[in-house]
Image (cartoon, rainbow, N blue to C red; front, side, top):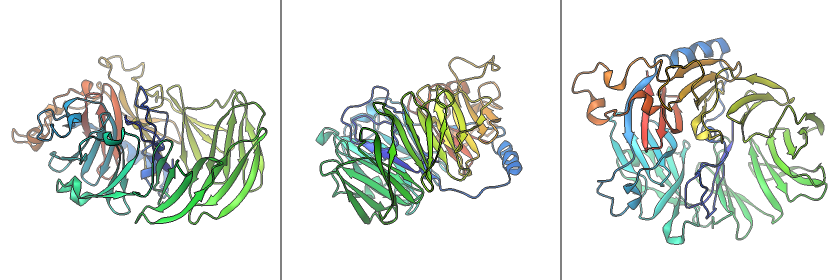
Length: 469
């Protein structure tokens, strides 16, 4: 499970692990990243057989039940918020209690109520505001929006916290600004760490990192060192990666609670070889250089093992499952599960991702870290799959077995055939105009609400679909 999420200040939203302040947008709006996982705490394990059986029941007969639209061309705020005039793909979905938040590529974020199916409000509270990312802070039951503004050429990140109860009342402007003292211009960033309950900011103009308490946003300590190249967060610790020397990279491990240095050491590198990644997972350090083997170092006893470069090729993204002491890799639409002995423990039988760039907006790992829910390409067995429709696949992480699938061929009922009377609330507030096949085309964001047992998907038209049984 990924611990933190970082966001960058670009004029265009992109799903990144770190929110940093890049003034230049990416052409595709996405970067290889790991997301959504930081919002779930590590949970206790359950019996595997029961978990599998329960999963089969949970996802049995999932069907399309509701449809929401983030596009509002005739809305009363159109003159103030010109972003509403154009349709844009959904890039992020977050849910909190009975509210679903959908963020579009244009920077517009809409909030919908699952109880009434009404749109409660837009989270954009001022003209020229482009929301880049969302974070639900369960510590104080609030939504944090991270935005950039046209007034400063979209160059600085601004964070805002709004209580869910105010959003439910349709008052998104009742929130308050966060980290106003920080200058979060490129390459500055803000990272929300739900597992440790911390926020990490980086002010590039003075090269200072600051750690805040996620509960009350109190600053705990700061790190001022111009030689720090990167910071990685794991449960309980932070890894400081310094500018590399010719044959080694200096590293420090700090306590996340107070910044105390727990260990300082140098990791030897191959000369003239690019470092592809350095990742920290508890006591394990993963280092990969270009055209070299993967190195797994135990920082407690300096025990080093290597995995052949032909067996482990550099992935486009990681997801770390701390509870199971495993990690997922994503490469060329495929997902693999590894242990920290460098052994591949799971390959998935039917889980080819739809997006080749590992758009992890379309991936959700459950709280128990036993299931992965993804938007996938239709398998060769789905001969009757319509058009460009993909499927939503639910697979067991430990076995690789596909437990359930939502596609256009096994869908039990069309949305309009729900069997309700003519005054059905679904028809009154949330008419589903899309067919199942249309709803499964071009999915650009996916979220699973574990409390309500509902899957929410967003597509390139700015529509959000609800799948429920």
